[in-house]
Length: 214
Image 1 (cartoon, one colour):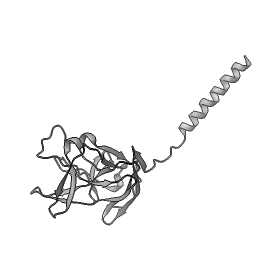
Image 2 (cartoon, rainbow, N blue to C red):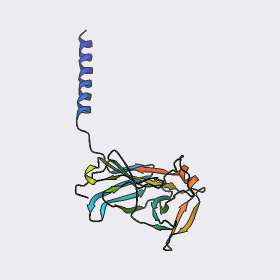
Image 3 (cartoon, rainbow, N blue to C red):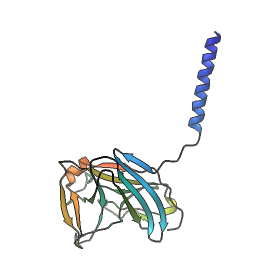
């Protein structure tokens, strides 16, 4: 009987200890996140005169090269495209903002002449690349297949901010095409269908939003 009481008391103490740990404060999410062999680390989020600037590093820790979807462009009414080196897509929903540089799937209820496929940049195995995104303020929703005016959100009303990157792993089946923007700058891009299937995505944790007025 004494052994039974001692065992029951020990179990109760363990359960209470677990409850205390779960009730305590949670650690803040790290900005360093890895998906497979590709690691994303956000170095800084700054409020500048040019807008909200996200500086990040991407490291390929594997042996196989990867192609990052990081060459977005602006499209003129004439259909001509111009590479925009610091551009990113922005989605806004209930104060949550996702900044992305990736291939977005064409919505099923929309017919398009041609899918919007960003250009890609090669990142060899073992290499690290630093890049930055500049977003005008107030933040404006900007997605490739938007059918209306995008939402706007003042920086002070951002509840959550995340960065999402898409990439393709080099493989014999990967075919890249060569394009040129309206200023003659060359870039490579994959075919939409196979890339939509093969794309991998890495996303940061929740990022600290700097204070300041838009």
